[in-house]
Amino acid sequence: MDFWLELVELYEYKVQDLTEGRVPRGGRRGLAVLRDELLGAPLEPPLLRRLMETDRQYRLHQGNPVQHTRPRPGHGGQSTWTAPPTADSEESRAWEELQLLQWHQRAAAQARDLTLRWQREPEFGHLRVLYTVIENAERLSRPGTQPLAVPPAHDALMDLHDPEVTGRLAQALSALLLTEDGRTRVRAALSAVHAEPFPRHPDEDVLAARIAAAEREHVSHEAREALVRALRAEFPLPRDPRERPAIRAAARHVAQLLDPILDALPKPSLNGAPQGSILLAQHAGSAMRVPDDGAERLTVFLRGGSGARWRGLNIEWQPIGPNWQLQVGSQLTLLRPGLPPHERSQTLKLPDQQFRAFVSGAYMTLVVESHTALELGRRASTARAAALLLDPAEDFALLRLARAAAQVMRGGPLQLEKLTPDSARKYQDATPDVLLSFARKGVETLVARLARVGADDAAQAFRRAAQALGLHRVVADRLHAALHVALHDPETLPEGVPVTQVDLAPGGHFTSVVLSDEPLTLQVEGRGVTIRWDYKGELVVVMPGLAPMVLHDLLVARLPGGNLLLVRHGSWLGAALAPDVPVPTLEAAELSTDDIRMN
Image (cartoon, rainbow, N blue to C red):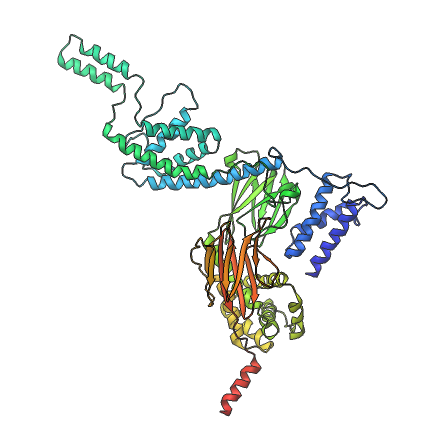
């Protein structure tokens, strides 16, 4: 922690030199190397905020090299200022396009789900309507072409029983939905199919005239019938009018299912990107201070830096010609801003989660596609393990035990002089957010080590560490079990409920809530805890007697006799009250045994 603090302070000094018109110590190249190193570093949230603020000054100066961030003594310096983004700025256009691409990806997935569902119908009523709507929407772009009637149920030319055919229908629909013109034509074609599923053929009058002429021919009855049949074969057979109500009902249902998809289309913004919505943004108003680990998406101005840390992963990028090479964790991909809009996304699959990246010019949005319940369960198990380390009993015995167990599993000698009760004073003096960050990193480190050793070896390592610290083996087993669950068997949270008030019962079980714009009130052992969104778009936890705390992905708030556990994934919040449990020592266990013997 001291190492990164010193590097951030060094970066602050170098940037101050640069903005005040001096050559930074170590040169500009050294400053650039230091900047790249820090942007990819695993910094604590307070330290990361300092880095982001300094880096914003650096980027402003790079865009305005002759200006200074503040007047120099005795000089008439001028402050750096950038105009706020407007609705037609590069940033605003990219923001709106990224929202559109994300909506379109969801719309395409919903369209595919609908076609797969409709394929199971015996008469393919909905698919026939959809096929006709797509065909007629495309015909509307070619003036003079006649609309298609809804085809028969088992038209051999459609093959609606084939999944590939229905997949192409979903793709064709999503392609139309991507543009305003396409959406307008889809609505018009759907309305026309509902009004008249079987429009009158334009040559019906010609056919009627030819049949009338044929019937006036002075030929045999058989020859006249053959001539009429030949004429009718040139035109489609008239449809049974009794089929019309069923087709209209299917068209109404298709419209009802498409309406919410179209209504979810992002609305244009008059003021550009929202406040605090873009990491490394060009404009201070839209700049995000630090990545939100509890959010499901992260938007980045790629030219503003080269890396960030989000949701426990290092994210790095660099320009490759007109494209951007992106690395998330161990996965690498190439984003191509020059491709058509529907091709400007890539999927990155990691062992325990999946991301989708969208690109618009020099802006990228990274979206988490992991299963929400599974992700929330992992966070809940991580929060439980972190809460154990935050228990101050026996001079933070469990936190010292975690450090000792890590030393044992590394294979080196135990450095007990660094694990004495006196060493816990720094934990008592640390702020809650720093202490939580330290405990969480401890959990993540131990979980990573548990993944590389057998369960029996890990159990022995924890017991050996506990014995060295004078703790009973039950303490070692308790911590090992919590970490094992976090690694192999994350707990399952119940489905979220949209409420604004919850009485949190003791016992440690999680309660799930779907957050809304309204504040959420938790009743926790007679005290009210308020969880609400603030003006910066951050989720804030307000408890009596404590400073407000920001909830990103998880938060452990210390209470008398236990911990309030809060985990979040998007708008899904999990809350539990985990009581403290005794931390027996070997000395206490021996005294208890002596008492038994005496009695």
